[in-house]
Image (cartoon, rainbow, N blue to C red; front, side):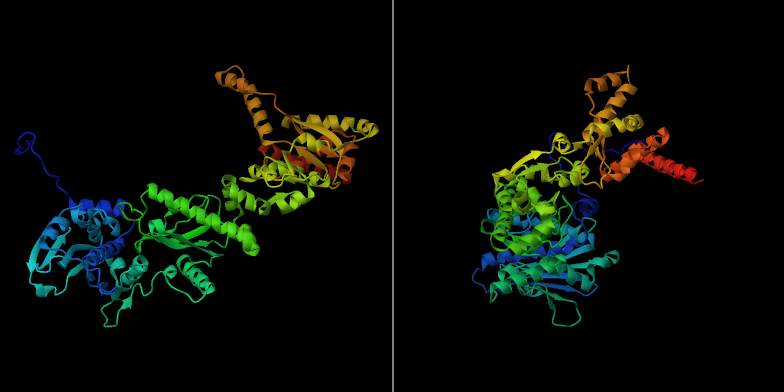
Length: 615
């Protein structure tokens, strides 16, 4: 096979890239745009930019002099505007060159912040639903110029021709699409109207829709944004903003927070969610840029800790990405995020100072979000830490209530540790807070910053065991044989056994163990099993003296008094295993397979013993 001769250009000669338009459109549809529906947003956006440029030319024109008209009857989709329009030269420059935008022309480059689009590829999105784009335009900047027609096709070809002025008597642009058969989902009249409302409900220019049935046409944006309207009373304003939030997000807000950042032309509302959301789950926010919906999932507009609100905002100075479906991360966005975070802090401060009922409902639903904020925000910490709920030995309580009863507050390092000691600590009069949940231990340790009369310390097992009274010598000697059998039975779990008296008497046993101790014992076991190998040497180097678990039997409990009196060795061992299993389950930590097996075996052995005795 021989290759055909290819004419060569002189060395160093420039060449021009050949663009496969179908491939480019496929790239846009699969990687840039989230859905074919964006074609209508791009057309409306181009129309808005054209109106903005027209307003520059005629600043004295009435506010409603220029608008946008949409038409869809099932066979065509048309978007018409009264904007600045295009000359024939503009058409060749801007519609026939992929990647160039009229918004980048020198005359307006310095002021392009007034325009939504900045990438000049939006018109290509129309090829997602149509094989041909028809543009008819007449320039307002050059009134004597003729109308110009441009037809672009999906194969990359286009035609341009000039038409008499009568073809379009007034300046502006009309874009007409003939949808493909497979694009009906996005081009039906009802869908076009829905998309227009979705993207353009906050646009500042009047937008009308006509479905071709001869009716008066439906307005797309009949009213300005709710925060831009006037209301007779503050209460009426609050109700209107809450109703808008409910319409947009589908829930009735616990409260609405007005957002206003004049420096970037941002206005909007934050709707406080009425129910808790999982920690770390971030909701998307609706962000409009100059009235056009940019994204419904703009997580980056707020910091991560603000997952208790959903926002809808309209901004002037935020930059969209190339797809115009998210925000460009720059210094402006970072400053906006910080400023909006400050607005949320201010709302929390106002609720704490003047609306305790609202604060209580907010904290009931979103205490975890506030805890995450309080960890890093000293002001919020001082305001709200006394009011935040915690799990304590007095039940669920605020730290303020808990500190009134307990001047010394002990805090556990894990949920498991708290559950092991809660009943005994409560009976002993100790004030213990569960520090195992996210942020709780760190926050409890900061309580003295607000309540200097209160001291906080981590719970030391020695503190608790000091409140477990020893039994008398005679009882200890009588139980010695049973305790020895129990220690032997539980040696497989590295567990010691002791006999004490403590309240409540209904608790037969207390299992003192920790996750760290179990991990260390597991590592020690692995080191013994791997002894002599490289891995064994590594584990041995890491090995420490593994602390043993301790099963403390309660002599005040009738079950324990019965068990220690057993003189049959096998039954004594079985009862000790059963007591260990019960204590392990009461700690509510995950059981190891060996522990689950022990519980089942000891239960079956006790049943078998009872059946033998009855027979």
